[in-house]
Image (tube, rainbow, N blue to C red):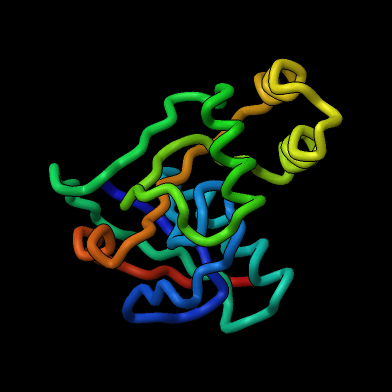
Length: 159
């Protein structure tokens, strides 16, 4: 499986200690199957934090039966509760090596925040989320999972 990662810095090896906390699927290394989405992430992080430029890395992921992989095929109640729990608790509490599913993007963050605050019920939140086109994300949460990920390229975008 070909995956992409957008960032504002150059690296040769994925360093899990640099991962941000309280993300959709927990602290980890996030990729996508959509190159344009990675490009958007790279520009967003560069615009927010500056850095060395906007870079899109390409990886090859060879899955393995020994990996604990959680898949969400859609933004359903299980996905919503999983995202809310990760954003509340932080760290990696779930025990999966890899998690695959929809992205809660800038358009959906408000809905998820209102669900987490108890203002929206799950039904209301999911009803609102269904109107958004959700891109995908593949997140890596263990060194074991990263061992199946091979970097095959890096492109720098002109800003």
